[in-house]
Image (cartoon, rainbow over all chains, first blue to last red; front, side):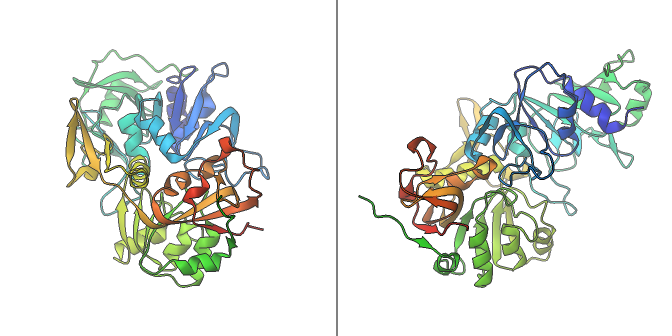
Length: 218
Length: 220
């Protein structure tokens, strides 16, 4: 049995295509890099200033001037480029970033994402999230389906929005859901999970009927 | 011909910066941050600073030290999530925090540095960031008007400098530094190394020395 995070990371990895420039958020989204097919080449961007993010360095080989956007030590792959923040966000806002994968606190029936603050409780700041959601060609939300039993896929976000933009896809440990102009469409269910279980864990209305294919996790 | 610059001690540079000054400080989670200048500001007991930076780092690191020392009255940043002290001081009303999306922050600083009257960006439309801001429609698309930011001082970290003040940066330690070097009345650069004029190839110079007013001694 795969754990929730691994299901999400494996499924999101299938969305990454050869030649893409991809930005992975910290936490769950960063796991996606581990599940890419070996034969495709993509460049990962870290918005603090590198295109061509590589794996974690071996202990003792860290470069204090080379970290990812979460502040962890990383390496750069051959062919990588280091860039300043204006170039980095120019790539993001300017439509040069093919895909961003971010975590989420809530997504609603419009496909709008809230992921940067919980008023009165947690105010970390938006960092680069608002630019990423507003600017990337595809926005994939990778998150657990619920938080402490509470639905995170809701009719209308009650938390402050990250952007007024319909995200491209929501991937959770239970389901793959595509926001469309007509609402949220249930595209896939996790192995062994029923449509009823997904509906019960979702307070938003889901379209797509009862005949929903299972995710293929190879 | 430009005279070669003198290299200063961090204390001398910190003494130039009065309480209440607006500082642009390079760095991202303390990577590419001018740490010796920050230590010297803390040591001289600086107060009431407004800092403009990507983030407030973590306690005990980079800008986090200025926060812990109570040197900061206002922070204009994109992220404070890794510094619980900033959040605590914010809740206690000891510090004012203006949160700005990271890409908007760097472009506002760039606008301040290159003589532009503002930035039009789609980032923040339909969010709390848009509150009270003018929306401008260009060719049918809505943009937020974001105003320029300038500082009294920019504190810049670089990998190496020459004695004309030309700066070269390293990997993810570029971040806000080359942009901030454009946008302050006085620019103080803290290089890890200083090399003879001519050693940094023209193509490698990311901040031309004409922008730099003061140079710190090399790190070691």
